[in-house]
Image: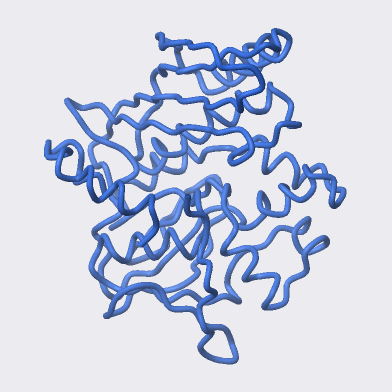
Length: 301
């Protein structure tokens, strides 16, 4: 068990309110509202060289992605911001935040600011609030016999990180890493149709494992079925090794969900990547048979 998992396990003794969902879900549900809080730390979630406008967008987007996984309508945010010695960086961050708030039609209600010691890495936090729909799916609830699906394509942001580091050249992939697009509209349509749903933030394999644990079942994933973009195939390839990179990379912010049938009438691509089966954990295979799981399933602190 990772240090992160141990700490969250200890907090569960405090998170006893029903709205906390046992601290085992992407968000809390309280009085018809959905609450989530995510943080970005410089050098971990974004690069020091990433443009501040993009950092602001990402801070907002990763939180709205959690709301999307609950089928919620984004309403407002509260932000915790660390001031630095670079006033121009702060100014550009505000410009980027306004762009994101306007794009997603979300209000900034308040928050807090603190000043960092000289040269300390920035840590940014944001709480997003959404209006719950009639059904608020959780990570739990997947049923044996359900299909396992993802929206969009997988792995783009993982390769985009390499591009942002200057190790390759592909603006499309770089933007996938710096400016993720939360699947809010898709989540609202899917929420009443799925048995379980969460966003893919840390990697398909590790997030599928979390869903399997919460649901008390196993998830079998067909590596050959993982949807890869043209840009990913061109830069990273599409053989087994390339696909393993894609399913263990984070920052996709697509939706991972289980359902008894492929939901209709979505304005985004949906791909069936596996099935819910009896057992526990996540299993992986391709056309040649079972694949030993990689040691690292995805991102963990």
